[in-house]
View 1 (cartoon, rainbow, N blue to C red):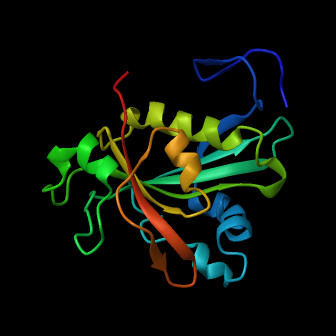
View 2 (cartoon, one colour; view 1 turned 90 degrees about the vertical axis):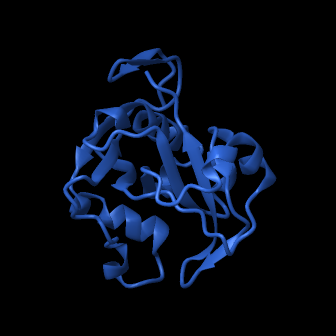
Length: 187
């Protein structure tokens, strides 16, 4: 863990892990996805729909020794509120204009994972911050991000400004999730 200030692609950090973040191919992050997100499922379950799409971006965070410590994927997916679930009051108050929006242009954050040996060190926060601040350079420009977060990861996203959209729902063979939304500021 670094204690001296350092620069990550133009962003200055006073503390936290010193990592390098790169765009990679889906195949480069499948082992970490399997270890963290699908440990009791076949390896093939780590291949997500949209992984090979031209506008999909895969991010990998590496430590000083070149070890993969975190990953995430950003897909071009419209934000659609499942009307069969209860929509949170927080979301209704923060974004009333989105309640009737069907298929709004957005990007879905998916497959975010931090290696178990690197949890609690700020790696996930740095990766999420990097994605939020660099996504405007992608071919599909939007300020709207959404994800289906595992119940255990939901507090992490809420602490980083994401707003719960739905009540808890279950993804078969994966577990309980919440749909979350974030409208990021422009830089």
